Image (cartoon, rainbow, N blue to C red; front, side):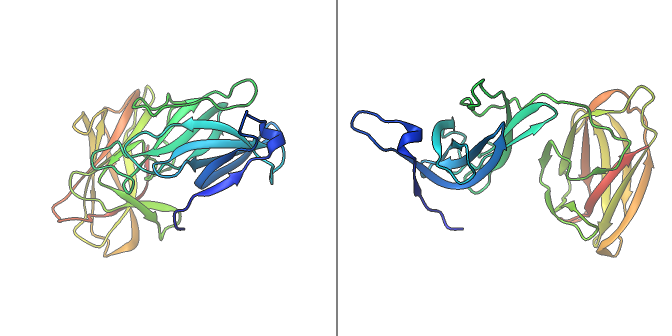
Length: 270
């Protein structure tokens, strides 16, 4: 969809008046996020042209008229564009957005970020600024069930794509790339083995399992063989030692090939 600025008229009665300004407009840019909460419809969107900020309007009806409510997030973060999303999860509300704050980041190489927030008593949304801290976890991750490889809190180098095995998989894996999964609860007894669903049409490689840092304690590693085709998925397993309690888990990928070592669909500890 091409970029464009659309001036959306705001109903005079629902917005109110100012001296010398009897009717107002809000600059709607693109990327609407639409939802209903407590009988009120919300439209969150990129606004004000380039560079964008995030604004919102509300209405008692899904087709309007809309009341402009203000700016949720000012223009920040090294990207000329910013697209929003809002979800409620386990009793908490989260605002998702883009920035270009990572090395090499820009309007074309954005990162997805999230802030936790509370609605005001009247249902309005507070103004938020971009931060580096992230949000507090609402729960621990259970490593003893199937977890998708694209379950990622931080990553370096990898990409995701639709998977021939269903869902999504991690791809574009090169030597030294890694994935971090946060707040993994291995429990008091700890993990004894690890399995992963992988495929490779090259020489394959290795998945190293580290705790807390990419170069943290090594609790195990599993060899990924060539499976002959990137759509030929196999399960590989290895023993694990030293994984107890709650940790950030790092999957560190190693291999001798120049790139695209293998693909990674899902994993599970035992």
